[in-house]
Image 1 (cartoon, helix red, strand yellow):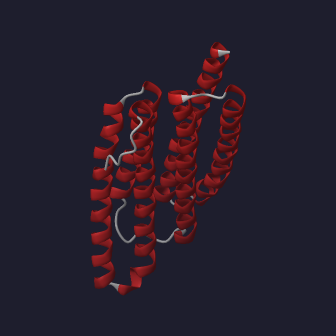
Image 2 (cartoon, rainbow, N blue to C red):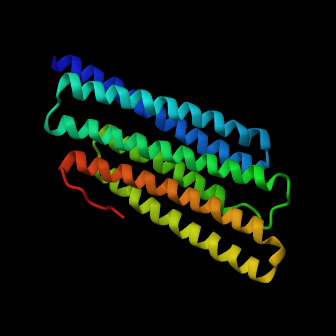
Image 3 (cartoon, rainbow, N blue to C red):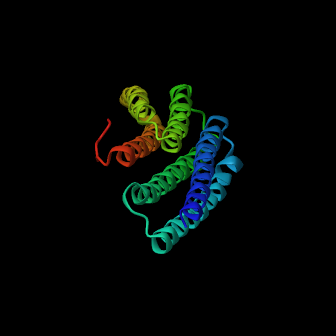
Length: 216
């Protein structure tokens, strides 16, 4: 029975990593749609989000089956409970990518009010945080989980820079208010993705220590 449980748990972890890779992809596609103003690519984000939703349901069902049939205890139960929490965070990251795609479709081919330098930088950091947090989970690496919090601070700093620059531009030129506001929203969505990655890092620490703490 134990060997079967371990195999099922390994399969669950593989699907979790697959979902994480899908989330990294949807972030990349959404931001690329923005920087290239590719509206067709923005629409593809909706399809990718459907795939993420489907795998979330699949993983959730497998977690419930493991709990019902294997009746795990102690750390095993914490692992399964954490997986359920992680897939919720990953699914919400996908939703934020969809929100970015919505903004892309709203901006359309309108010239940008400022060069897009910081937003792609935020996106790369957020993608890396997703990978790092999942690596921390797979390897039970508390220190790596804590590193995610440092990355989150870097994302927050970039967001504050974007926010300040765009607010100042809106004050100086009120004709750009709509697009500037939309770009602020995109920065906010990326900042929230980073927050969800940080949540995953916190859950890794919970698995290993049994303590619920905020690492940022």
